[in-house]
Image 1 (cartoon, rainbow, N blue to C red):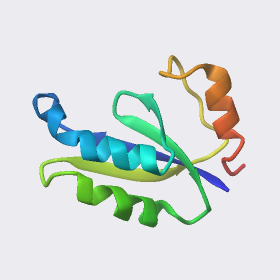
Image 2 (image 1 turned 180 degrees about the horizontal axis):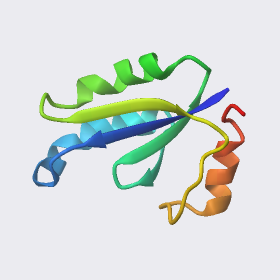
Image 3 (image 1 turned 30 degrees about the horizontal axis):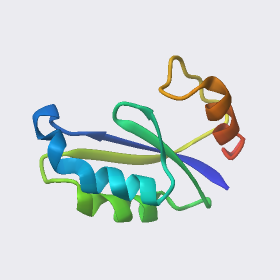
Amino acid sequence: MALYLISYDIAEKDAFEYEGLWNALKAIRAVRILYSEWVVVDNQGRAGAIYDSIAPKTQMKDRLLVQEILADSKWDKLLIPNEEYQALLRNARR
């Protein structure tokens, strides 16, 4: 397994247009860890597939990044408790 970060930039004034994006993230069981960052556990080598499933829900003006998170990551003040993130991080490659 692997842990992936999904990060995007959208205009706050257009946030009402992104219900489809957030529903797509929830559908793949992604967890919101910061306001514009989510993580999802999936098989190794799946960043492209995750991107392909989410990108259609964004607009041309948006920015989107999907990348693997390694176990060596550090964090502070996430939107979820540290224990929850540590449990997700157990899926990351070492």
